[in-house]
Length: 189
Length: 189
DNA sequence: AAAATATAACTAATAACATTAGTTTTCCTG
DNA sequence: CAGGAAAACTAATGTTATTAGTTATATTTT
Image 1 (cartoon, each protein chain N blue to C red):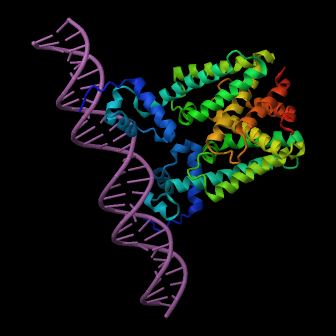
Image 2 (cartoon, chains in turn yellow, blue, cyan, red; image 1 turned 30 degrees about the vertical axis):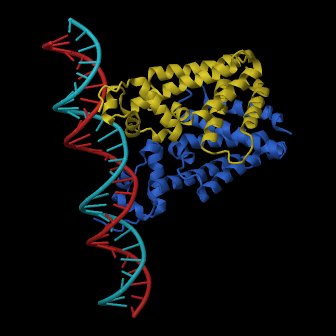
Image 3 (cartoon, rainbow over the protein chains, first blue to last red; image 1 turned 90 degrees about the vertical axis):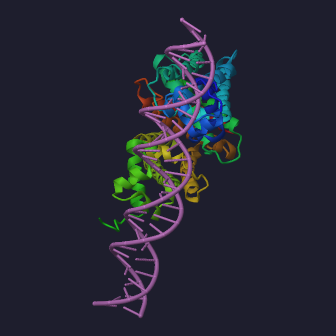
């Protein structure tokens, strides 16, 4: 065979992300991953810190992609337009990358520094888009939680098939965000 | 030893629910479950349909408990009081039974009849509490999705440690629900 | 009360997986 | 061109779920 296949942490995470999106988070096994990469499972340990380490790296990678999706979607917009666009970007990413999105919240090592940093970036992005509403320090924190809950709730429920009825999901999400913004005075202190 | 330990599907699911809440969903292995029940793993197959079947039963059980929590919390109330109380009941259940709650959305067999039925009961409960707002057929469906997303989003993010800052979660949830209700005109058609 | 039956436990065995230890091969460097 | 670091390998172990086949027990029937 061919030793020195030329792996590296990057290629491994990319391949793992593909598997995650194709088969879900549970499909990401070192056995399946090694098979896809044309390598034996133990070889992966030269590049990643076991399955747990891989999952953490996947979560970080997912958060980066999520940030990109949200950021580029809301680029150049402001006010409710920005919030709505960001929400749609969030939902679109979760739909397009179900496994990767799932992994962003299932990291085994929640204390990982890079993971925390990427999570903070996403939070900051949400904070930014709510900034114009001038809610005050505390109010803003509560509102960020609320908006993030809406976004994650929609993404997660769509993924789990919680929305069985054939009714446009984008409409539901848009209306919910609009309702949230229409009542955002509740957060102002 | 003691043959005829006297298991039964009920005892098994209860024990599994305990493990789930103590160690999370992943701790629910047939090995751990059998050990707790003083039995060998294969014996469980006389009562449950493998790990997948057990998980489905756990999900059903969790949904029943969730329904109870939501129902009893909002009992006798109406309007925004009812919505808020139901939301708090939802969050409290998810906090008290993290593993069981997690399982309600991770059922392996989403087509299971009982699972669908229990899920529908929960949805109907949410529908009922939004009834007074007279949103119309479509609007009501969208609003139910929105409220459910808020509730699940909060529960899920709290569980995953997504709310790191020490800021009262109940306040965040209350304000978000109030904002949602304040802007609920968005759903009216 | 004794025999027959159904059921629930068991042991044994297999397959998939993660992981560790130790070995060989290859690439790069000096 | 030789030597060493790194990356692949094989072999082996432990955990898990699951199936097959066996034994023991409780219940039912005669």
